Image (tube, rainbow over all chains, first blue to last red; front, side, top):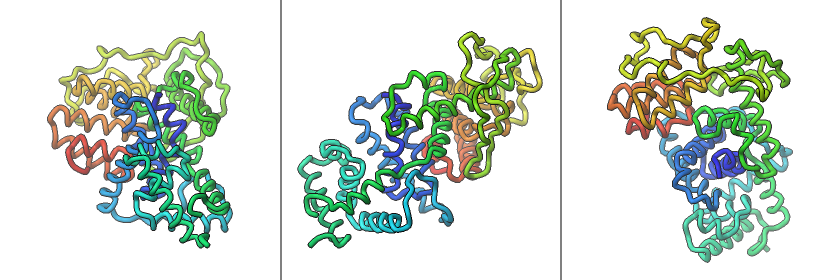
Length: 157
Length: 240
């Protein structure tokens, strides 16, 4: 698989992954680009299987590097939202904001599994590979995440 | 909801899933990745594997924009190509930091089959690797900007960039020399960041650490949100 195909197919996935790892909206474009630059450099070492777990690992490390650098720079006020494809009305935006806040309350392990399976619709096997844990552990984290989110959204009886 | 998300949550998850970069953002990233050599050249995009349906149409538009963007300089410098354009003019691109703009006058269509290949510049025509790299004392370039020499069209900025990138792995001095050529021919070019990153890496490989560090710092200062920060950090051994 070429980097062109990876970019065309998974730029959105990388974008969302970086956002969930805490990359500021205004920096998503640059960091998404960085992920694919890294993918280009490491393409020869990749076995060509399961592109999303591979890109997820790169994105996670890029986001970690971004967070290390970000605290050394002055904060910029984001006055406008970055360009995005989602077109939501105000009530849906409010609920999305709530969902994002709830997701942030999860610990990183549960949040990662939940996002990769529920939002990115990766198989649990792919998810386990991405987060580098046994399959059963991934399932345990997913169920725990679902319960916490349901509780936070007031959906648990 | 222990085992299955509610309808409401499913709806929110679908909405989250639909979020992603806009088509403009995809175009910008695609262009810069192509300039950095991470994506194929525009002429090779047609051979790329079929993309996922979600981005199929988007990928085709990106390819068209990349082709138009990469060929526009060829249109300006090549006096033998007379194929009329068949695509709409490309809108000017403004960068996030306001540091660079691209003005496209008459973007050509995809080059017809019988049109001669754009002029190329052989490595032998480039200045020797021993030539000084600093702008202040370089000798006159053999390659002139497009408007000055009608008989020997200058190489495209993108072509120079890609030559420098290709040289980086085998001959850092030559890579550095080519970035100098690019800087002289296109002082306010579109690929300033990419050029400077290659120059920093070449300087680092040549053991000229102080110069590499200085240029890396200058690049990071001029483009605070450069996507090449990590690459600069690797080259010079510390954050720029």
